[in-house]
Image 1 (cartoon, chains in turn red, green, orange):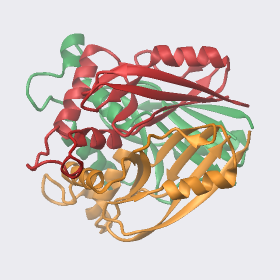
Image 2 (tube, one colour):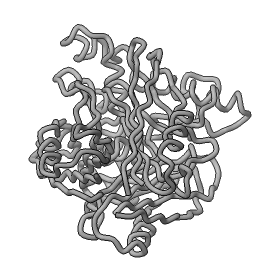
Image 3 (tube, chains in turn green, purple, blue):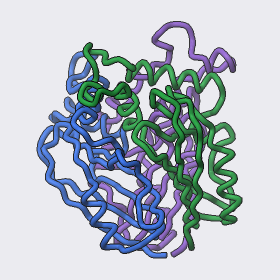
Length: 142
Length: 142
Length: 142
């Protein structure tokens, strides 16, 4: 067994943008040229997350609206979030959202394919309040 | 080190059913016959999730009710979810719930045992709005 | 490749306390003395979770308040949570919170460093309603 590393660099617009990572993952797997193992996907930074989703406009919109409802941009109890007040910042909601969803995902690789469903894509969600260049690490142990 | 793969096939009733995966995991570990490594549990499909839970009727009910409250079957703002409208579908809530909880879990295997607590079971939650046959992949790197 | 195991033992105060695991992780990595692989962090028990967060007082407070709002200590619909009623217990909210956030995290290790952001710390959240001694397993495959 060995470790194969790939780094996906993505330009996002932030504000909850959801990006399909399928192409980048497929490229990382082709480069590694391995058959069976585990693929770990991890986003660097505390205001973004990775998960899986049927990547179609309706599902993207529903997930964005639900997260906006559950962890609104403005503190629901009134006043401002503590992170914003203490740090003269404006992205506290992005930090909370990212911590709740989590930065990592681990996917079995079986006979050369990720065991994803046909309508299950690995996605990056960038919650920050401005465009960012993101680093998504794809670590393949196989 | 090597990779050991097991596939658990489960018949679920959907609608938020929570299924204890302990027996299937124990069987996968016996087949692999390994001592130290990492076990990755992953559910294929975008309307189900895996996590850990004390698997007793009260905890199961509380988790189901909380998820129903946080991401209701019907869009809280009124109208229907975009996934349903665009695709003439009825399981948008299942997609959102699954994306929030996530499809994967990684558990250390130490001296032949998963480092789970006595009252901590690995569970599958099927959020879809109908019975499904689910594939849960157990990938052991050890 | 090989597996390196470290066990972090932490005394928590419970009640949603968030603890920075950076020092323990750094120590586990020094002991392992490896360069490239995957580090799995897992908390044993069904009332705690691990995730990443910018570990500063504001972000800690915002995350705690948001979780308290989304999954309150007292059942929002009235009455008590089923776990509490059935088991004469008082920590049902802790079980639900832990199941939603999840107990595990997997982080690529590249050229001797975890691919975390500068302001992205791995944290343990103990949701239980009393102080606990917690076991966090750090499993390094490298």
